[in-house]
Length: 250
Ligand code: NAP
Image (cartoon, rainbow, N blue to C red; front, side, top):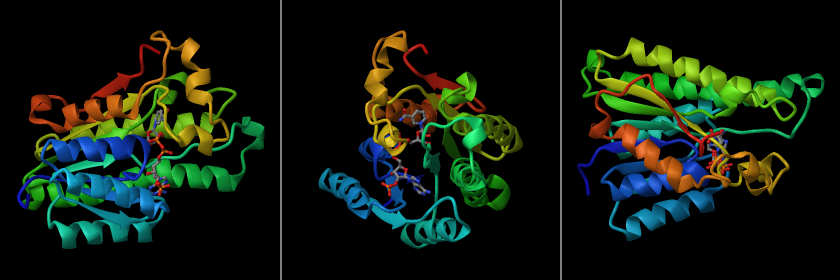
């Protein structure tokens, strides 16, 4: 397929991003799969998409840095020359810690990736999507978290605060570009069974916390991808500035 719409998924190599990239390709999107370090995982997503007859390329780039973002958008421009959707997904947690224990380095990393990186990727996307700049519009989906509402006290309030910033940014940007053909929405996943919990030192977190979820189970990356694809689709043509909880009721 050479003419389908183009989707950039940041952090598309694993977890929610990988599920989103795979599902988007099935729905006719051409996909640029960004990763930070795990090239093999990104390549495997792209290979699966190609095997199913879709189009995907991979690009390394740390969304917490300007160089990384520049590499991602340079690849987008050279490979596809357009962007119709951005899934601002790349995000990190850190070890469980109380506020007294937070270092400056921890907060700089958390906010560089979870907040500034998402805002900067949106900046680059809007330049290439806005009808104000002669483009055809598009859709941005920011991956927030229920932590934005719950606050994650005793676990990682810095992460929760970074997701609160994503929610506010989503609302503001949606209004800023509403007449320029761009819809901007966020999804707040609840507890989803991915590698992110192990990266924060709690590999069993998703199953351990199942009892506090009204539906009594963690969600799957696929269930988040389904919601992302809805927000990207024409069926969501009047949906902008929405913060969609996909959290099993929690
Ligand atoms: P994951 O399984 O840990 O995967 C993270 C993905 O992001 C990987 O593809 C990773 O790339 C990439 N990544 C990490 N840092 C990056 C950076 N600086 N630049 C570019 N890519 C980067 O995480 P996940 O659970 O799918 O989480 C995805 C998003 O959902 C995050 O924003 C997270 O906060 C949010 N979320 C997750 C949950 C949950 O319970 N899982 C709940 C609420 C919200 P590599 O493969 O190269 O490392």
